[in-house]
Amino acid sequence: MRKVTVKGFGGVFLKNRTSLAIILLAAITFILSCINVIGYAATGGQTTILISNVSETGTVSEGVLNRSGREVESGRHGPSTADNPAADSELSGEWQSVQMRVTAYCPCPKCCGRYSDGETACGHKILPGDALVAADKKYPFGTEMVISGYNGGEPVKVLDRGGAIYENRLDVLFLSHEEALEWGVKYIDVKIRRE
Image 1 (cartoon, rainbow, N blue to C red):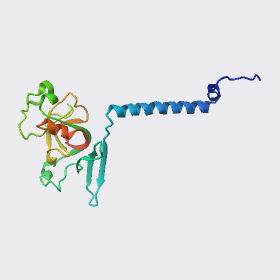
Image 2 (image 1 turned 30 degrees about the vertical axis):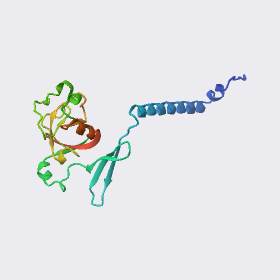
Image 3 (image 1 turned 90 degrees about the vertical axis):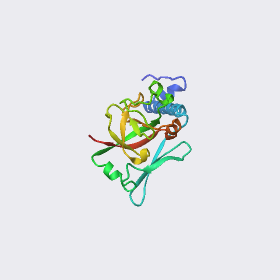
Image 4 (image 1 turned 180 degrees about the horizontal axis):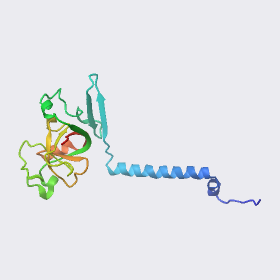
């Protein structure tokens, strides 16, 4: 048998396959950690934390914590018929609950660009007091949705579309830019009336 002399520090580790596997695993872990740090920095250090609590009566409340840990939105999970007796008649029929990313907009040029003429994609003229939603084309115009924290829990109709609105993303209408900014981005369960 011939004796092999290995020169250098790397040869000690690369001779054993187990050591090689451990080194590769450590390198992959380091690279994934760097990617995670870059992603965190790219979002400005903002993270969204969803919370939900169940009270003794069995009701569920949910909220979103902002960067400072303060609750931005709280309320009941889905429409509440106990707090809103009118919801009993409004929510008759079949409803499906879907987790969605809900943002807000107003009919200003900052939000709507060249489409800031006060008319939605379906031709609806926006009036003071209007509550409506922009949704993906898979939700036909007129589809009713209940969005927790918007329009007092009452159903709103899909009357608009948007370039950044696709799949499970929605945009709720506010009449002022300040209100739209205050809404921010929320990940909530939205009730959708099945057809």
